[in-house]
Each structure stands twice: as C-alpha cells, then as structure tokens.
Length: 85
Image 1 (cartoon, rainbow, N blue to C red):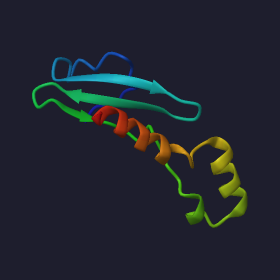
Image 2 (image 1 turned 90 degrees about the vertical axis):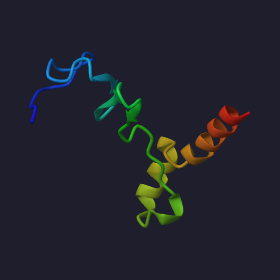
Image 3 (image 1 turned 120 degrees about the vertical axis):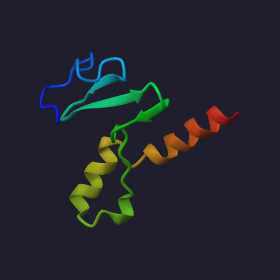
C-alpha cells in the first residue's frame, strides 16, 4: 500500500506501469490513471450528474440546477453523439 499525496508524476512504485493526470477542482482534486500494459483508463467521478426530480430537498434541487450539475446528462449525450459522428 502506498500512502502519499499524488502529483502529476506517478510515485516511483508504479512509475512505468501507470500514467496519471491530476484534475484539480473547486472542492476536490481527483486523479485519473492509465494502465499502460492493458490500455485501461481508470477515471474518478470527474462528472457528476444529478437528476433534479430525484433530489428531495428543494434548496438542494435549486443548487443542483444553479451549479449546472443537472445539465450534464444533456452535455454528455451531445459529446457521445459528436464522437460517434
């Protein structure tokens, strides 16, 4: 087990096996990984999508809409459609 703060370069223990990308955010910083040998991309929850109708608290529902977290599903459909064209 490795206990350290991740940065743009991977720790020496997995250098050469994994590439990583730090994605700084407003509240959280997330790290995504690429396992070179298997070409597997390991992603974190960079995109969160909330369905307003499922958010019971009206204040949180409003905040979800204001923050733009309710519009991501539409944006993702557009991205997928553009990529498949």
